[in-house]
Image: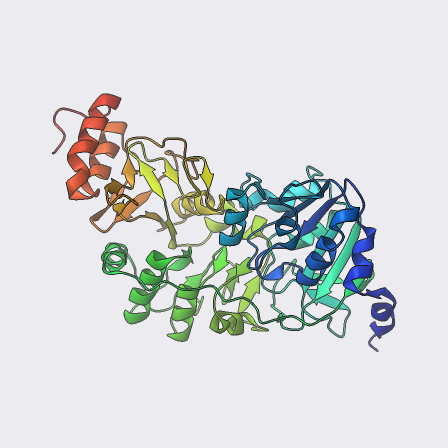
Length: 446
């Protein structure tokens, strides 16, 4: 006979305004991220601004405005910190209203569990409680279970629009939490999708040369990844497996095209594995209560040792800049933080371990700056930009002008290979810089 948990639920039910009264001066408050930011609790906490001081909040990749940051530009009352910047959080940081927390995404659960972060109050948005007393973290499962394990006081915000998503480490029980809040929520935010350009498809075509039946795929976000998704969906390639940090729009294209079966995966066979979902309603519908998908914590999904067990692992991610040594920056332009580290290096390492695996870093060869000057995205050296993936982990680098492999190559070989896929108008200047750096051999091709 099933236990009726509705009595316990009602006993813990509070209004958002009542629930946030637990927060006091000097506390650390942690939010869930992305589709799971606790909107009602965030607004209620922001409304207490004038009576609170020095409250620190952590969150990440928020798809909605973060009210505690917006309401207090002086940082006297609230100090908002992000593990991984969304577009909105990037603007907050540019305005001095948000601080960035450097980390390897894979380490986030352990950072909590090892006690490196004090958590006085946790506020997490969840899908409605099921008949067994469990709430689901829904489409955001990166470190929410770890956060629940360590927080002193736990508040859940029930979002009636969030679906149950199947997996592991993706639930919390009513008996574990201190308060529940309810209220009306808007639709789950959709991310805008940029249509791939001609150069995106040229780049994708170089990657497609290596694709075959039974690959296991990880894709990042953006028009380059979308172009690969389109090419794969149009191709004769079949029986694709998915093991990815983010379940993104390009992968949904493959699902709708009937390409994903997961039949050849060595582990988690028949399951599409991921740690978070962001995109359109189509992708949210795919993830909702689907027995063929499995969400779980990022310390499993992004673990190179786990990724390496999957044969024919193909990892495709984007870069902002790549230097002539093979160092990759995908999170900042100089000191300006754009996003975060994510799992790029983990998937490069995992793909290299994989039997038949390949890891690709993709970038346009150049861009035009605000003054109309053509600038190379393959640069002599990273000038203040943060290194997301080291030169020792660089694998395939791809632009619209070609595809080169960094593994086993010396500095002069790397310089020659990378300049060969740079924009043709900028190659001579890159050769001059390589000569100054002492990494250009006289017999290199010009």
